[in-house]
Length: 495
Ligand code: NAD
Image (cartoon, rainbow, N blue to C red):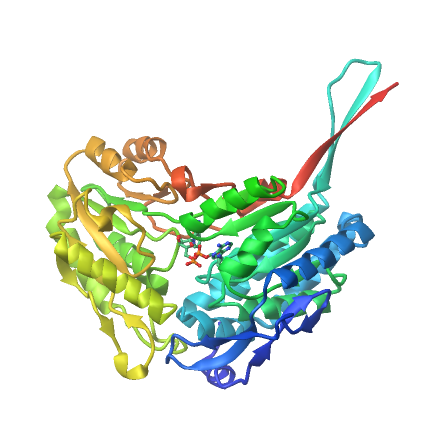
């Protein structure tokens, strides 16, 4: 684990102006323009990034295509890719302190969580796909005796990666690592408010021996660089994590350009369901509070709708409020903070808008509901709980992506299932019960990509992550994700 001393030294490091990373080197944006990087810790600018445009995306895609065609990566032996990516994982681990603090200065996640979820998790993901790639076989088809049917697995070509600001390294690695392992060349478009760690990652990958042009990073505004990547005629696939509206645009870009394939990991409004027979209500309350409030609720799988069975409602709410008010919100670079800053002032205002609307619509505020620590100049929000939330309220239907929990009661299992599935989303969920049959019935009945049982959140690289309905399609993580970045080719040989 990182020490407070190391954090305090690294938090003062000068970052300066960061360029684009194209063809293995840092360069300025074509326009020469840059964007300031403001820290949500204190509201002050501390660096700048290049404000890329469509011409920069084109440069990056051309570099990636040239690298792909050169073949020094795309046609290299899987054992070579494994060696380079393993070195890459080691370098990410070696620089974990630096990457973690840099990321927290950028997006405000509490360092305890960021350290594990960002560099360490990214390193683990890179190592996982490095180790997997020399174990992927093609197939021989069960044909008639006079032919040989071979099924080859090949890289797609140039893959565009677009990620959000909550965990740019972890989510970036979920896409970059399998894409690279499969032999693709990649152009990454980081989130404009948290680009710094992905830029640093690109430098490390070069140090690991990845040929120039195989990984490029173009920073800038989503509506400019993201759109240019989505519309580019020479990009073969886009792997995206972010909001529903941008996901829809990417599908349109694909339809308007070259029909590139698009993988979407979108938002959620995940139900966390507590049955009266849950074995340890106190533990369930603590985990549930963490499951919505860590990283200020800016977690795609956050359990933002809590459904509690009436028989234990009051007891559970007492435990939940106690667990919530114990959470220390503060400087994300202080190891004693449980919850850091909201990623930006804009996001904080958006969260407060949800609070105002929930109050107007008749939900009852139990705790929180306001901006705190204003004297720091940063964006901090008290963990917020509303009860008496009904299905027609905005808080029950729309994703806040902030530390705001809506609570509902239920009587029966059928009612819990109905409420759980009454959403356009289907990303995550949880069920707390000591009855094995209830647990298995709920796993089948809930329409979501993941159902946690007697826990919330938490998963490792061995299992897929992704949603159903408007939470998107395509899966990150596990060997299933590797398949997304491999194309099948048939060879039909007359013997
Ligand atoms: P966002 O959709 O605003 O931005 C995501 C990325 O898309 C950013 O890099 C942004 O610059 C880029 N972008 C913006 N406009 C674009 C355009 N017109 N064309 C192409 N790219 C564009 O999302 P956000 O605010 O960064 O992140 C929050 C959202 O991400 C939430 O909805 C959250 O649930 C979701 N999310 C999902 C997962 C998951 O695994 N399912 C994980 C984390 C976050």
